[in-house]
Length: 325
Image: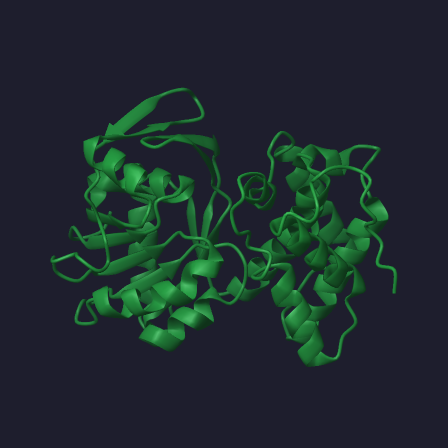
């Protein structure tokens, strides 16, 4: 357990942010920041988390707006928003992080790539801890969130102050999240990015749950191309990654374990919200262009999801998944 009660801010009011808020509330001095007024009002009255075993926990959460908050700065800021919101949040993180704290850190557990770099530019790389989580959650209505799949958290080892990442991991473990601190973060992060770049756009385009990708109807050849392209870009960026067969097996295992889950990209499209396409497939496309690597399948998937976001394509079967050029 941590030695003191830290002041912790969560940036975000969506499903994951809400789940983390309820679990972290007993262990820190907590404030949640966001712009979803209905959810923030519900948090103040009592936010309920239903765990996978049906147990429910309710906690009144202090929520606030970045622009009107009058309290002291925070030891830890946990970013749990969509990736496209990171640029606008970076200035708030700089303003509200107490850099005099011995554990002053901005921690990102967001999907996609590029978040660490954006936050580091604002607050300094020494104050940023990169991470990711496989925890799943679903917002049923304002004030009520469901845990839809227990997962783990992976944090990068803090090279500047090793105690910082270990202390943060202790907080997360105390709140019920299995947490690992690793010096091999880039490999693990890219493996998750490759899974997302293979499964998420296809699930969003076809409108199917993860289990579809382990069925006999799965577009296996397209999946292999997406995986291979992402692997080639990661390796060109000097990331140590598994061979294609091992990566394909990892994706298969993840889809099997989460067979009934509709990925977040599909859920975002169905509710008319912005996806994390830019931070997943878009990131790989941009890095491939910089490195002179051809990624036609990833580029095609990226464009199809953009069309779906714009309402020009409805998720469902029958879409041309192979690039035409």
